[in-house]
Every structure is written in structure tokens, then in C-alpha cells.
Image 1: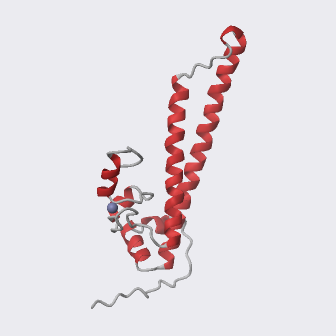
Image 2 (image 1 turned 30 degrees about the horizontal axis):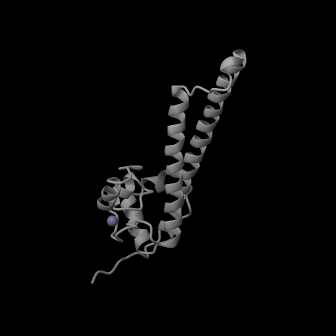
Image 3 (image 1 turned 90 degrees about the vertical axis):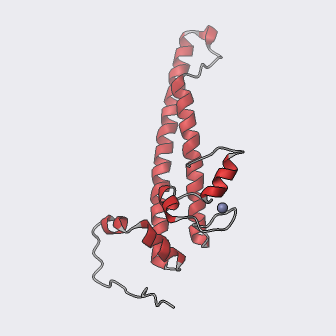
Length: 163
Ligand SMILES: [Zn+2]
């Protein structure tokens, strides 16, 4: 039996040297901590996810604004030539933006799901077969809820998301 010395608290004065220290903490350590029921690790994971969610939301609103601009541009064009007014021709910008927004929206959805799983205590486990998702995979794709094997099985029917 190993005795885990998890009670070593670095109780120095809370030096708030920005996120530098926290971000340098290896993901593996964080994940192990979380799996051992460490509340700090759990909060840190939530913090990372919330950061990702905020970034994702920001990007989404920027893309949506850009999408509105392409639509407005097109409407102005169609005002000049009322004959072709009804038909909106979706240019490549529009199509590309719409795809990007879809991908971002899916990503945001996945991130929210991951945040929920952190809270529920089943973050890092495959939602399909229940095995632990390897750390390297989670580090690359924190929002994933499936192990690589299940993901690949699923991709045969629906290709989606990262990996
Ligand atoms: Zn699985």
C-alpha cells in the first residue's frame, strides 16, 4: 500500500502571480488530483473550462457579427437591383462563416457538457464504455467524453468534432 502525501499544502502567502503557476501545472497532475477527489484540482479544471467557454463565446459572437455583415452587404447589393432582390446568393464568405459558427457552437456545447461532468464527478471517463480517458487525449481535447476507441466506433456513423 502506498501512502499518498496529498496533504502537503503549500501554505505560503497566496502569491497571485497571475495564472502562470497554475497554467504550468501539468495537466496530468490536475487530472490525478481531480480523480483523487481533490477540490482544488476540480476548481482548476472548472476554471480552465470556463476560460475555454468564454473564449469560444467571444469567437462565436465575432463570427456571428461577421455573418450579419456579409448578409447586410448582400442586402444592400440587392436593393440596387430589385429584380434580383429576393434571391440571396450566399457567397463563399457566408458559407465559410456559417460552417465555422456551426463548429464553434458544437465545441461550446461540448465544453458545457465537460463542465457539467466535472461538477458531477464523471469527467475524464468515457460516456460510452466507462473507461478512463487517457490524460494525453484529454489534454488535447478537454471537452471529449469518449475514449478514442468509442469515438472511432462512433465516427463510422457520424463524423464529428476533434479527433
Ligand atoms: Zn469508450
